Image (cartoon, rainbow, N blue to C red; front, side, top):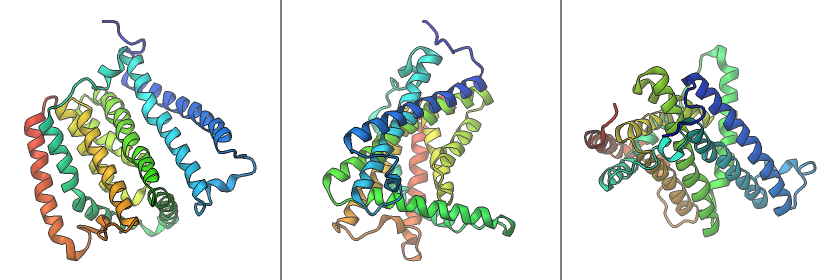
Length: 306
């Protein structure tokens, strides 16, 4: 079978090419997004810089969402397929898309992500209390400011009251990240580091570190890092990209669905506090037991490549 034209590159070379392709597609899609936005939204970027700072205007939020979708497509969805073609002449094979898991592991994976919600919330609450040494107070203040700004944008994105807005959020927050980030991080980057380190565990942890750092949300770093580790092992155990995609989608989709139901007052339970407060500690205990048991079941039924 014909090899990809860059198949003989070293892992370091492949990582460099990956970075170049991501930057190139980001630039192309950004320019494309600007051109489309000018035509569709009738905006003049030289006179409308406030669009990206004034989140009180729903039209501005819609424009920012449009750019989020365009840029996520350019950064995460397109590069892995270009990389797969260059490295192996077959993107679907390189990304393990053709390796389809059985139904039971998919069900176990989905239940695991739901059961882990209180545990994730608990870890997030611990992470949020992080304090840096006094001599790093400037860095800590910058991190807190960045987190607050990210939270404002996140709230503007996710707090919608219309079904159309809800479906846009499903696409932007659940579908594109689940496919794109898993193709890139597990399908490409984890594979490169596995070849580089000759050790799947190092590859998983390094990729999870980069995965968490990429989100630039410092006070949610620990739970996102551990989730990245879990996603990495799902891919390693099964040899299929579909299990981490399933886990990633369900995690993000639950956040979108429950935020929508909470914002539209269809429910009054806030999942973000489940397991992180003293009166919900029982949920945390059950979450740890069920999550660890399910992960063990997935490991026993799916381990292949470790």
